[in-house]
Length: 79
Image (cartoon, rainbow, N blue to C red):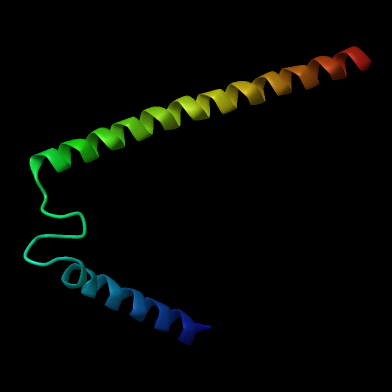
């Protein structure tokens, strides 16, 4: 078990060390050159993601709360 864990950690460290050289050529990564427009749109995407995440999670919580209240009402009514 220790040998497997140490091997996985070594492989992970090697991959993390080699990643910048493998995915960049003179500062140009997979998405092309980084410009202000690219960074701005990426940040807008992050903002939109969290807005959608909060809305979806709130809707899920609301449905679960309704379900809990309905079950509580049924238990009180039948008991």
